[in-house]
Image 1 (spheres, rainbow, N blue to C red):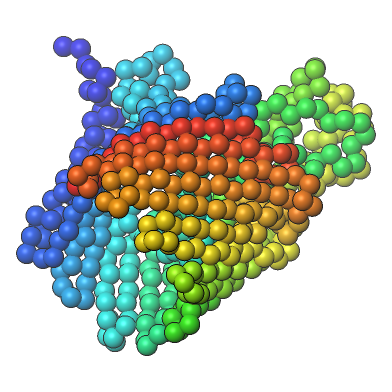
Image 2 (cartoon, one colour):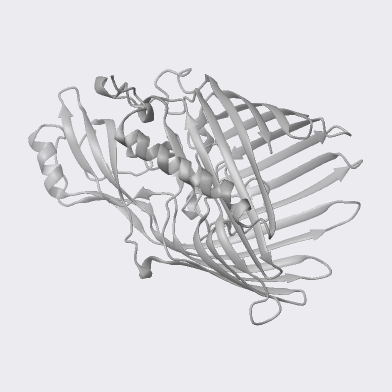
Length: 485
């Protein structure tokens, strides 16, 4: 009998692991049936359809036409009044085949890729040795900031930009979180023993300014004449060692006063988004005056000092603000003198300079980012939100921080059967001579409190010199159906 595409050792091993994880999560409530147990989950399917982007979808990194199916299982257990545990696992299937050779068409993991995602998996103890002293250990989220959709101080966990239209999502990572609350005050310390990079969509490589071909870094200084046009850029990411001295540390103090909630924080770790840092190697010079280049990406260290506040004002109006001061590491990209001499011998450049060419990616100087906003709920249904942001996720130098203004309106029906949400924003650079804009609209319908139908539309555009320029003339529609249980 011939073997089917699912009957391969690799697929059987993968399926066994997936099944074991599902049985572990589903079997947990049975094993703990005498305890306080809550388990839940969700099944969802979504279709993303790109309408236009870049050159109307032709050869654009942002092109996204895919179907994503997710099965998510969650379990919360409280064995006693002073202990709790949580487990979350999800199976993701993205119907974008990864077949690259003719002998891979029979491999199910290539034709219909499946991945297992571990969410929050932790154990917590409350009132340990003293009232108000809590400890949580395991894969978890530690969220900072007050902004709606984006907070500059929310850097303890790595970013999750798999969906590049949502900038407030974070990845759970292994950590030990110790907190102590007394009266209206709170203190916490978080230790992250392992570095985890951010999860990114294909488009974020361009948005993050890591593509030399976009002119994010000037590497032409000292060269006589024009440098060759850059065709392809290949990148090698240098990951830090998994060692104790690579740990991340976060400290935070909170005060819930009668007037407002305040917090101060300090974080030391590595940037979860990579950036250029190292040698740029010219390769494959072509007679037409173009070449490929190979670059090195790294995750540099930084310190962050953060302050945040949120307070009710009057008539149901509330306000928030948080400020983050970054003390980054200087990073550079460079082409060596020997590489430049080789280009001169190939007549790729007229004359090589006397030494290396060095381009500054991140100056290492301190910079300040901030968000401030107000919101209000009218007639118990209509929610309005307005906020200003100075400096976005991909802007890492004081001279690169742009200005953003965002607004949001959310209106649900009285019975919560439907909900409409509108969001929009504008961007301008520091000189106020280049701008961008975005608009997002969504409609959600709920049935029996468990099934949800959602339709989302996004339109973005930006002039050269703005972050939104990477989404030039982009418009996308998403249809999603989900059921919770």
